[in-house]
Image (cartoon, rainbow over all chains, first blue to last red; front, top):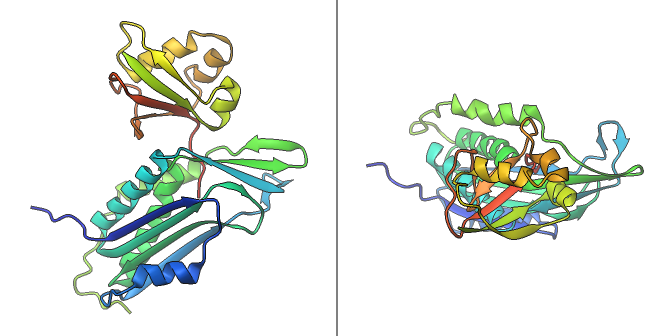
Length: 170
Length: 85
């Protein structure tokens, strides 16, 4: 029988900013088996479709968001040997340059941590119920989903994760 | 059958409604049936929920396709494709 992944998963949806150093510390606390930690931080850009974006407003679906993010982290932990996953996503009003999302992944192995963090971001962009509204001098408009995001998530259906048993992590 | 409907983002704004409790008409069993019932309200409902428009449905907080079966007490959310991250 397949054993369930033992990764520690922590999901937060918040309006406040996050502190990368604190999140790193929480992720690795007391786990000497971790050989690699990969962090991805997404920022709000000031340009989209050639208009000046003065602010970004993020809406989400409370309850489903946390479930969807937990499900994505669990799916990553089935595919790769992960020790811990931490996802922080901000909602509310953000400005260009603000941090919007953090994905932290810890594993014994570097490749697993890199790949799992990319997988989590690709799935987050197509499955987690967040919506962006851009505020421009001409007024607000909802951001359309991108076809490229869907194909980025779809490509993981083809990917067969490699074996990491003999991999040296560094 | 009673369900709870939720609308998000552009659809919430266009419907001018963030949610409603709905007594599902007899004969409506699936998400597809529910959507055509809602589109039958006409106006923005018909416009946004017409076939060919892209939107997503979550049943009890899981993304589903339109063949999914409804049940009493279900939470059904209708929203545009997601754009987080």
